[in-house]
Image 1 (cartoon, helix red, strand yellow):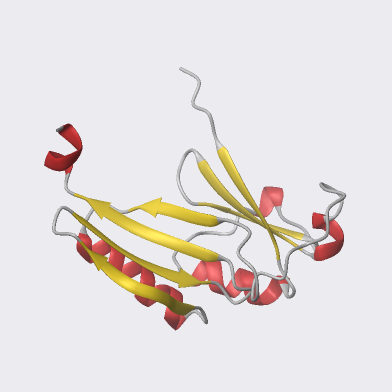
Image 2 (tube, one colour):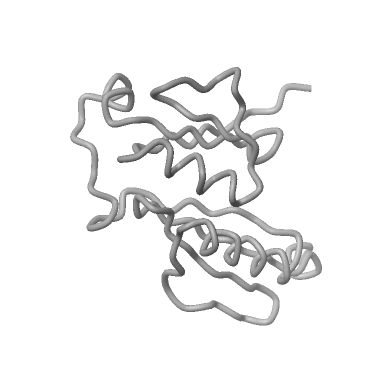
Length: 135
């Protein structure tokens, strides 16, 4: 059965820093779809983060690239299988050169934290109690 995929394309000011950061999260570099202007990181079977140099990124859009350290272009939200996995990924992000952003959100049935990558792109990591989702 066909599974739709999401490719999160991000402009980066330093591709080597991005490679170090995303591999620091435990995401492996996919060399088949990476070169000197793009780095591909499968997050799951259906989600891939693509980090591009500004020159490469501009091949996909005519719009100006947002300065993600000053403006918010998108919030990337990832689910996690437990509260502990939320904390684990945020801790990996900080160890890899990212920074915690915002406050921890703890609503009992839902727990989330957020981090920025070295370019300022914001990633939210959220766990939700499966019993709350089922209704």
